[in-house]
Image 1 (tube, rainbow, N blue to C red):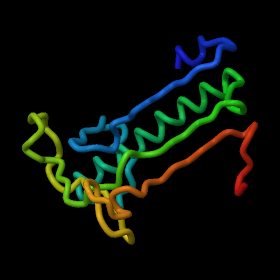
Image 2 (image 1 turned 60 degrees about the horizontal axis):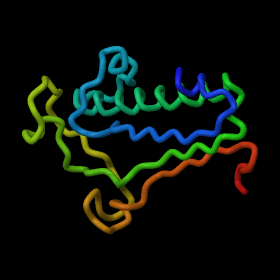
Image 3 (image 1 turned 180 degrees about the horizontal axis):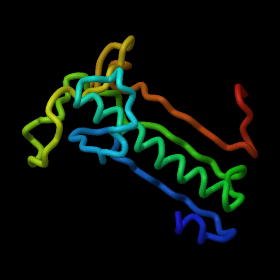
Image 4 (image 1 turned 135 degrees about the horizontal axis):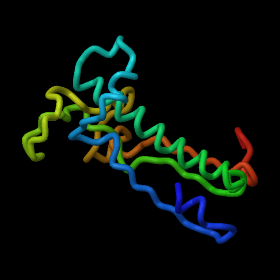
Length: 140
């Protein structure tokens, strides 16, 4: 945020490759406590907390753009690199042990066929959001 706020009027490219939501997941308690109680599986609560954490982090970037008056004329692209991996587990032994909550932690690509590592839509079709108020109109 300091970097964004210190740019002045100079053009910039900021690339933020978040690793969330990706196993292994271990979120601070402050995020896990905010997960709706209806999500009862502990590892799924960690997954949901990671989504909340990511959302908050992206929100901080947008807030910094607004604070500096750059939000209207800044192209913001939010996307992913691949679809989810439904069989992922938070206790996968390929990662060093670090008290990760054991259990399922994979994404769900339904109704699309396939998953991460496949060329089916569930592996390659991902959400993408573009925001550039000075140039783009909703639904345009």
